[in-house]
Amino acid sequence: MKQGIHPDYHPVVFQDQSTGKAFLTRSTATSDRTVEWSDGNTYPLIAVDVTADSHPFWTGNQRVMDTAGRVEKFNRRYGKRNR
Image (cartoon, rainbow, N blue to C red; front, side, top):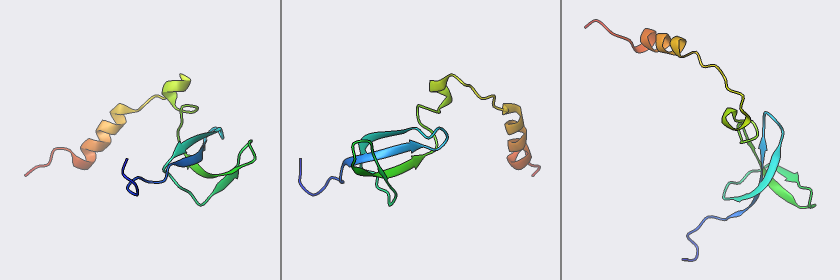
């Protein structure tokens, strides 16, 4: 590997905002927020909206999407125009 061209790869804690579950992994992401982990060390904390702990695909909780409403909204906004 060439020296000096790769970003810093370090331990980071990611926390799911909807469930509160956190996990420690390695990443190039950085943050000003920090958290003390169970090993006693302090790591940068990255807050994320969705993880495998809260994603409908992984949890089995499917949400009903109003596709008809979306199509109607699209047609109202960008639909057929008379020229």
